[in-house]
Image (cartoon, rainbow over all chains, first blue to last red; front, side, top):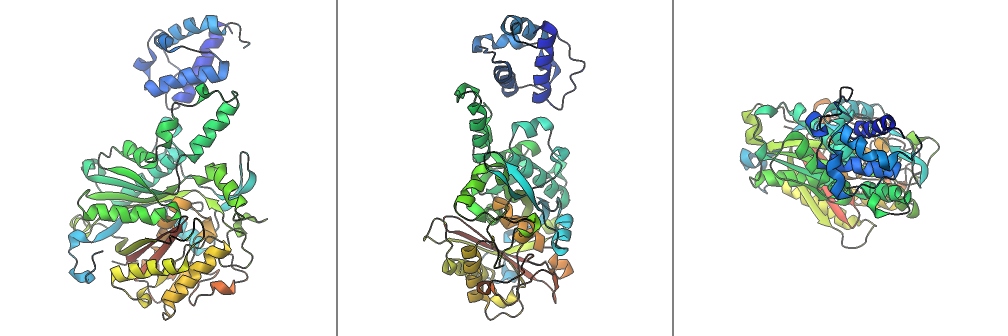
Length: 85
Length: 418
C-alpha cells in the first residue's frame, strides 16, 4: 500500500467509527481529537479495525503515534507497505 | 395500589400512565399500532439469521436516528436503540417540559427477557474468522452486555441522572418494568418513571434455535398467518422485537401539570409457579390474576378486556385459558384478546406493548381481536374471546393484562380509565 492508500484505509475506518462526522475537511497535521468527537473507546476501534482488516498489530506503547492522520500514516507505512492495495 | 377503596387512596400514592412511546412490528406509534390491531394488519414477515437460516419474525422499522446519533447506535445495542426511541417518544407524548425537568428525579426501569446474547453471539462469530483469537474480541463487549445496558443507554441519551436498571423477568418483563416504576414512585425514589419493556431477541440465533429444539417455533407458508394462539393449527411462537415504555407519575403531579392521563395502574401482582422450568401452571396464573383483582378491589366482572399472554403453544394457550375460565366464568361482560397473533411474541416488550394496544379502548370502546383463529381449539374456548374481527363494547373501564414467562414467573396489571 502506498501512503495515500494507507490514508484512505484509515479514513474509511474513521468514517465507520464516527458516522456522524464530516471528515472531508480533515486536517492531517492536527490531532483527530481536536477535530472530531473521539474518545478512548473509539480510539481502540481504530486499533481493532486495523488489526481485523489488515492484520496490523499495534502495541499499546505505540498508541500515541496514532494521534493525527499524518502521524498515523507515517507509523503505518512500514507495517502496511507490503499489503496489496 | 394500596388495598383500600380507590377513592380513599391519596393522589400522591396513585400512579398514572401519562405518556407512551413504542415500536412494534406493525407500528412505530400508538396510533399506528392500534390501527394495525383494529384492521387485522400483521407485522410478521420472512426473516433469516446466521447459523439458523430462514425463519419468521416480527421486525421493527422505527427510525433509529430520530433520537440517537449514528455513533451511539453503533456503539450500543439494538435493545438500547429501541429503548432510546421509545423513551424519547414517551416523553414527547407526555407533554412534559423536559428541558426544565429535574432529571436527577427520573428513574428508568426497563424489563428485559434476556440481554447480552446478541453481542456474545456476534463476537464469537467475529473471532471465528480469526481462528478464535480472543485479541479480536471487541472492547465494546462489556458495556454492551451488562444487564443494565438498555436502561443505561436511555439514561445516557437523555441526560437522566436518577436510578436506572433493567428488570430481568423472562416474558413477564414488560409488566414487571411497569410495576417497578410504580413502586419506586410510591417510595419516593423518583418523581417520574420511564418504565416498560424492550426486546432485541430476534437478533440472537440462539433464541430461534432454542425454541426450535423445544418444538415451539412457529412455521407457516404465509408469515402473517404464523402466529395463531388459540387455533388448532398453531405451530408455536413467532419471535418479535419491539419496545414499549410509559411515562409514569403520581396522580398528584399529573393533575398539577394538567397531564393527559392514559390510565391509572390500580392493581398488579406477580407470583411464581415453582413447578417447572418451562411449563406454565394454570393454578398459579389464576392466583396471580386474583391477587391483582384483590389489590384493585375489583371483581372479575368489573374487567372489560383481558389482554392474554398466549403465545401459540398448545400448553401455554390451554393452561392460560383454563386459568381465565376459572377466574372469569361468572363474567359475561369480559372480552379476551391477544396481540401476539398480530406481531408475534415481543418477549421483554410483550407485557407493556400488548397493554398499549388496548389502552385506546378507553376512548373508542373497541376490543381488538385475536387474528388467525380459523379453527378454535376447544380447550381455549372463553366466553367473550374476540376472534378475527374487532368488537364494539358497551364501554371499557378496566383492562387486565397478563404476561407470563419461563421459570414460572407470572405478572398481571390492571389499568383503570381515568
